[in-house]
Picture 1 (tube, rainbow over the protein chains, first blue to last red):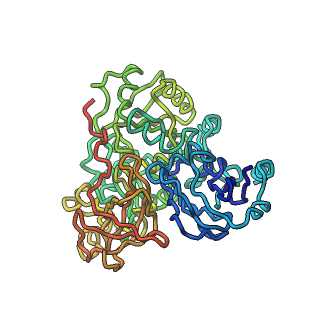
Picture 2 (picture 1 turned 60 degrees about the horizontal axis):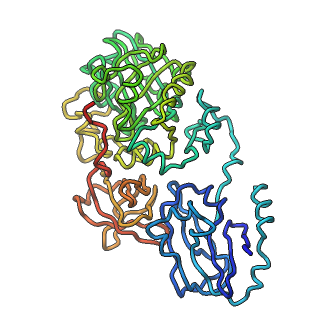
Picture 3 (picture 1 turned 90 degrees about the horizontal axis):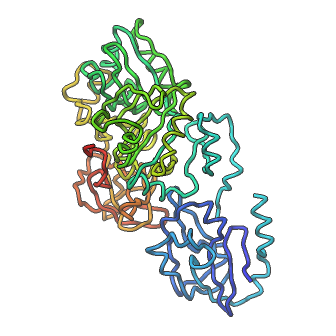
Length: 122
Length: 378
């Protein structure tokens, strides 16, 4: 089940891997995405630190790491085709997969319903 | 990530153009610009609007811009002295790009001057500088020269793209009747009196329409009735002008910059024009402290306003004034002021400091996008 952060990232657990991306809401707010700095495999993922930079026409925005772990896989398609994030932010536009130590860290994140309520009140 | 919600912008005394309701109905994302509530993009997004303008034709609401009528027996002489580019010899029926200067030769605004008649001129200026420009001009014009601010009663639309002449043809114009580059005609479109000029800010073939403000909604509907014409907002207006190498007042020009530093001496015929404000400063090469330089970056990641430019050894030599991803080049592009002691040549390599990253770039000539249709024969 997908979980969501207040910073508009989604996290989907697949075994011990957490797949990370930005939400549909965030992609829409940012507008056309022109560049994604794909994270580096084997780098440590530290919660709260900058995971990647996503650039739209008008601005660069930091995506923060939602969970601790190690980056195992990155979506290299985003290097030449960052618009994938606009086209499919919560599926094909995934950013990276993190091997996590502690799956219970996801408990603190929002469910889809909680996130939808959260964005309505922004 | 930190993203602003588009719906909670507090509209503090923002002005609206007559087309405001239409933009909202079309699903535009509205933002404040120069004191106005303007569409930055419509539902398809900035990149789609940009490509549509370069391939087909787009319509921009530019009603927020200002229009002054300057008239009187001394108008031509006054303006010839006030502006660095000659006005006295400008022919009726033409438009010229020009600069309103401070006494120090720095730029207060960039603008177009249309010669309407022997003793009458139309000056078209940026939205955010209307009041300052009026004050400045009124302080310089002679007693007998009138300045009438027609901004509140004037509507302006920009139709830009290779198909723009075809749209006018569909409206009943013969292509041979249309004004040539930087010329204008007074005409009527479906009964609406229109000043039509072949001018624009995109690098594509295009026209600007000036009508009475109470007719601009009707004109918008007439033009957008054609399926080829799509609305485009300020976001695309900025990406298009930068790709075309055009300066934006506030970025490439401001009160700390002369038009010479921005690279416009040849275009404004500075050497031939005499007897104008700050002539000695503008004609003094030692006063040129920086040179506006176009740079293409290697990748998609953009350098932006305020980023530092350095030589390959790390020595800082300048600063970016505008930068973004170029949809046609599929790389980032930038304009930067490089201090004039560093005489950079085309193909010289530089580094741009973007946050913690250092990005390689290369000096090029403007325009960045070289296939613009602005001069095409119609």
